[in-house]
Image (cartoon, rainbow, N blue to C red; front, side):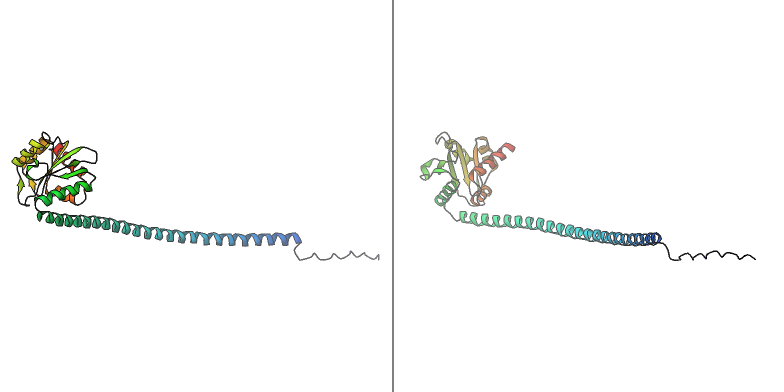
Length: 233
């Protein structure tokens, strides 16, 4: 019998994966790991963003509350300071008017003259007594206008009546040629006396305005106040 040829035995295929497959597997693994890491980082960042938002909101709320409290405290302090300032000013006026009540007529005239000088009036002089025809104080306002002032140092419970005002009206401009005529009293004016003053362009400075003047309000402002009240009347 003829001898059969043996076929060469095939070598068994290598069970180990090829290099390409190994690289592909590693790529998939690396991609999966990268995705997981990225997802973890994103979640971490989202959590921090939420936390940061909460912290920022809380800080804003605290700042708002503190700001409101600071504003309210400032307003209260401002009102309190103004109230205390007004009360202190009123006490100074009261003390000043009490000092005026203790003056005689001549001392009061000199006091009014000193107030005029304080406010920048020039050529200020005190009149010569009973024969001065109502010109207790004369001088010029800071703007140069001539002025004449009648002074009445009466008790606080008294009042300047129409006869006193009539006498001053009769001399302020006809005799003294004053551009500005001022009647200063340590008391109030009666209604008829005030009406006459307004009608004849006399500046009536009563006890209240005198207190303001003594407390620092300039004479020009006092004159403006009476002009405004005259216009309103």
